[in-house]
Every structure is written in structure tokens, then in C-alpha cells.
Image (cartoon, rainbow, N blue to C red; front, side, top):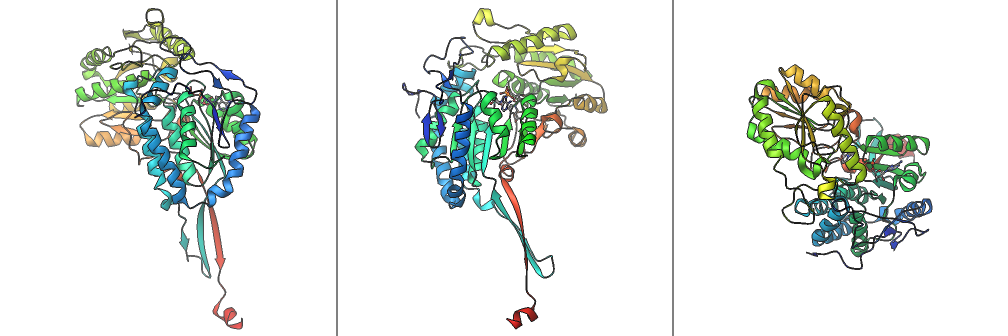
Length: 495
Ligand code: NAD
């Protein structure tokens, strides 16, 4: 495996098969959130202009006819090559993610997950199928599944290469061409993968990767008349803007994977050791910067004090430090904006609830955006910290007496991405799972437990549409109905 970033690596964009800088040469700097210093081994990142974004869409549009006409098995060979390259470059990509958004290298798995996505979709083309019937007398009917054309993907910074792959792989195998915009907070791995796309030999224009902020490039993609479908993962605020721009332009199809406020319900009959271990991991992993992290935990009153003591003991054990070093499992928040936002929530939380663990930012002592694992108890259900996404290692633990109360509290949110229930009573587990307003429910497990062949997506404000190995192809395929009228025997005889 390639162990270090090539010394000549400089982030560039991939437009029409060429690795390029921004046309006006504009760049933006990146700071390592663990040290607050400029990312040393990588120069600044290109900021795509409106013209660059338009050029990427134009390239994708021009490449579409040939790519969509290609034997899908041949399309799959490019995806497979990219999968191999991702695996080979795991260490290097881990290093780049650690430097730009603080992910500990020891916790980095996305290259393998991304490679799995490209491998899976490379073989998935036989599922691109329509239906046929003779249910309409005198006719044969059929449907065809066909690509949209140019698909845009806009991804966040928290798990970039996972989203990079789970949007582009199904879009490409379905015959679409793609323009992906990386996040301004974590653009390095996407820029390196752009080089690997070139190495994999994709035809020019099929797979374009640009870097930059929401304005201008993200916004240009959302309102572009030639982008026919857009898959977005990120905040609800941006999701709404994208939806608005899609509506005002060409009503492009929009898939939205947005935020969450996952509740974990722990009944007193649950396996407590498991519940403690898993709920701690859920909120701690990636320093709490995970859409489905269980940021609210409701414990049945009779079990609450034992659960809380065990949870605090486990949560306090994290090893914070330089994410590039081995043995570190708790990195900094991704940047100053994230750090300040998490700290503001913590300060508010101290006024509304009872601080039971942590509560401090270690910016001064560690000179990076580190936040201590933090636990609040007895926070009022209507407090802002209960309602909004904190996106940090901060958990709110409250109690309940009855099943009905637990369900009511869990559902009292505009979010509905993931929910968890711990109990040994299977009937209760299924009653609760049915009642939870959530796109995903873990029974005796919590996020990030997911299955690749289950649909992933949110109820309510957490999004629209679903992604997953059996579902994402549908996001990138139109359905065409064809009705064929048959001549009758008499008509045929006259010919
Ligand atoms: P964000 O919305 O700030 O940014 C996401 C992307 O949108 C970035 O690439 C950004 O440049 C782009 N963007 C910003 N403004 C835009 C605009 N006007 N038009 C088009 N694009 C624009 O989100 P973030 O801070 O990067 O990510 C964190 C959020 O993502 C959290 O809310 C988290 O819950 C959510 N998230 C959801 C899932 C999921 O699967 N549901 C997964 C991970 C993260």
C-alpha cells in the first residue's frame, strides 16, 4: 500500500479528463484542525469558478452519449480499476483526511468501504432492467430504465470518500456522467481520488471532480439547466437551498441526505454493558461529527444511575491527540467554525441542563480544536441543544418511566434519520420500532450499525430519498413506458 502522500501532490480539479487549477488561479488555504497550522505538505486548493463549474457540466454533457451507449460491463471495468487504486492508496488517503479534517488515521476505513462500493456497482448492471406485460389487451407494454444524463454530487466533510463513492458509483454504472463537488473543509482526498480516476482511465468528461465552496460552484450545480439529477449529503440548511434552486431552474431530481438527532432508548431489561459500549461509540466516533450519532439517550428511570455512571466512565476513556499518530481515537472538531459552534452549544447546555462530564474545549492546552467528551443530564426537552444538531462529542441523557413516554420523547424532533432501542423484550422492541419516526431503527444496536443492502435515509427533516446497494441505482435511472399496439389477425391477413 502507498504509505505517504506523493511529495509533488497538489490538489487540482478534474475537468474533461484534465487535472487543472481554477481558471482564475484562485485557491483557498487549508488548516490542520489538530494544530491550526496550514496543512504543510499540500499547497492551497483550487476554488472552482462559475466558468469552471459550467465547463465540468459541459464536459459531462458531451461525454454522456458515448458513456451511456457503452456496454455496462465495460463501464464496470473502470469502476473496478478505481476500487483497486483506492485500496492501494489507503494509507495516503488516511493521512490526507487526518490533515484536513482531523480524522485519526487509526480509525480510517473509508477507502475500503469506497472500494467496496465501486466493486459492487461494477457488477450491478444486470439489475438495470425494466418490466414487460400483456395486461393491456391488444398491446405489449414495457418499461426501460435509462440514465438521466449529467448527475451532480455534492458531499460534506465528515466522511468524504464514503459519500464520494456511494453517489458516483451507482450514477456512473447506470450510464450517467458525473460532476462531483467536494467540501471546502475536506477537499484533499477527493483531489487525490481525482488523480486516481485519471489513472483508472475513465474517458474524458465522464467523471469530473471540482473543489470549492457552496458559492459559487455548489450553487451553480444546483441551478444548472443541464444537471438532471443531484445527490446531496450535508446540512438541512444547504439541502433547502439546493431544493429551492432545483425548483427555480429545471426541477432536477434531488436526493437529500441531511442531519439527525438520533435517540437511543434504553429499557431497564436491556443488556446494559452492550448498551453502554455501543451508545458511547456512536457519539464518540469521528468526535461526534456523524449525522446518525446517538446524541440523545433516554434511559428507563430504574436503570438510569447505573447506566450514567458506566457511560461516563467509558466516554472519559477516549485518547485525544494528533490524528496522524497511532493509538489516537479522538481527533479535533473539523475546523474553527465547528469548534465554536459545538462550544456555544455546550455553554448553553450548562445553563439548561446539568453538566455531568467534560464541558471544556481544549483549544489552549492542545492548540487544536479538541472538545472533551461531554455529558448533560436532565436537559429540558425544549432546549435548543435538544432540538438542533450539535455535531460534536456531546450527549444528552434523560430518563423515562413508560414505553409511551420514551416514544413521545424520541419523536419530539423534526429529525428522523436513525433511532435505537435496547430491550430484551422482542414485542416491545417491535412496538417501539414501528412507532419511531425514523428512517432507520437499530434494535439492540445503534449507529453506526447499518447494512449495505438496507435503504438509508431520513424521515421528516432528515431528508428525502434513500441510498443503499439495492436502492441507489433507482436514484439515477429514469423510467420510460412503452406501449406497443399489435395488429389484429384480420389486419395482418390483409397485408
Ligand atoms: P453543509 O451543508 O455545510 O455542506 C455540504 C456541502 O454543501 C459542501 O460541499 C458545501 O460546499 C456545499 N454547499 C454549501 N452551500 C451550498 C449551496 N448554497 N449550494 C450548493 N452546495 C452548497 O454540510 P457539512 O457541514 O459539510 O456537513 C455536515 C452536515 O451533513 C450535518 O448536518 C450532517 O448531519 C449532515 N450529514 C448527513 C448525512 C446523511 O447521510 N444523512 C451524512 C453525513 C452528514
